[in-house]
Image (cartoon, rainbow, N blue to C red; front, side):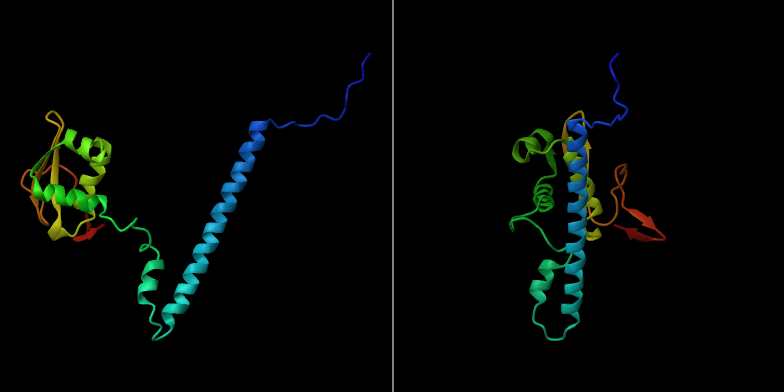
Length: 161
């Protein structure tokens, strides 16, 4: 009769080991990113407390929320603001061919033309699915008559952006 090994170990599969290593690496990267951000904020706080440091432009570059912006070209929002300012109707096919944007991406852009734009500069764009046409219904702070689309959220008569 053959002897059984009394010591039974749990053997992990290769996939389990790789998944665990990936999770550890992701957690380490997240911790490193948080540490860098905290260090940047403490340095920024120290520099901004100093008087006559002459680093206003440099501070603007590293202030959270001010970084990024790409290579200095026009943003997608600016492109579509210009497009809808020049044309009252734009075909969806033209948007797809010229900019590579489908209906999902355009939904977000149209919403942001209302949500993330100053009230006086808002562009109210309606999409008609059967004709595949984006139509400018109006501009300005107030929604056009008969508007059934997205509206900015207001709490106690204060607009939340």
